Amino acid sequence: MTSQQRPLYFCVGPQSSGSTLISWCFLQRRDMDGILDADNDIFAEVPRQLRAPLPWIKTTISSFRFCEQLAYYQDAGWTVHPLLVCRDVRAVYASLRTKSYGRNGTTAEDPPLRLRLRRFREDWELFRAKGWPILQYERFLQQPEDELRAACAGLGLPWDEAMLTWPKPAHEIFDTRHGNEHFRQSCGGNLRQSLRPSAPPLEALDIPGGELAWLESEFAEYNRVNGYPAHVRLRSHGADPAAVAVPTFAVTRRYKWTMHQKPLTYLLYKIGLMSKAG
Image (cartoon, rainbow, N blue to C red):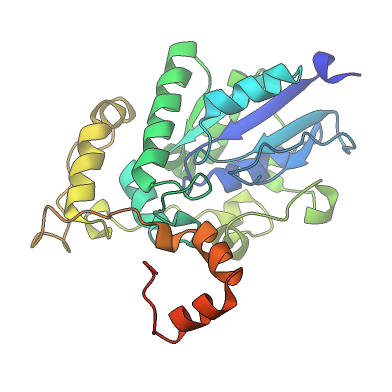
């Protein structure tokens, strides 16, 4: 069967949205195999040699918007069936600030955090306009089976109990190389054992005051539609409500690659004799 005749099930969400856990549930299906968590700055190659008939790819909205990825796979002849995972962007932003992949950079590989979230908002608007399935992570934590069943229905898939029981070991899935550390630490023998329904209250999140104001303004409609609070009063940043996180080249992987290509410059920087600005 050629790609022109095959469907591709494609899941996206912002980084730190919980989408890896959703991806693992779908890859447990008997009719599905593919990529647990693709690189966000590369168009993943659709696996050709799978253990199941339906190919699956999960990636995040960062270097590319979903609509750009959709066009890429459609150009290659695939019929894309999309699923979007959404989460309160304040929790997403706070989580990204603690992750290595949350570099607030200025390159295509490590774009500014605001740009990544703008891309997600635009894709969310596209999903709503098209009527494509959207899975809300917070509801999933409280009612996992209901949310997974609704996502399957939206994708035109029959229900498979394996999405809850997780019978497949990792070696029976085509590609599980990636996946964030939190997922690997919390992944148990089945979905129920792996869920952590409780989360820090939004008020306790570590977000600069100016970034919080931007998030609540930029995502006002998103918060309203999804039932998230319009405003949150943070406990830790009341003293400087205008504080912002400025993207810099110095935090990016491209800067590190450049420094490694200039060993003396990198050494001087490491021992403190040269600033990151060079």
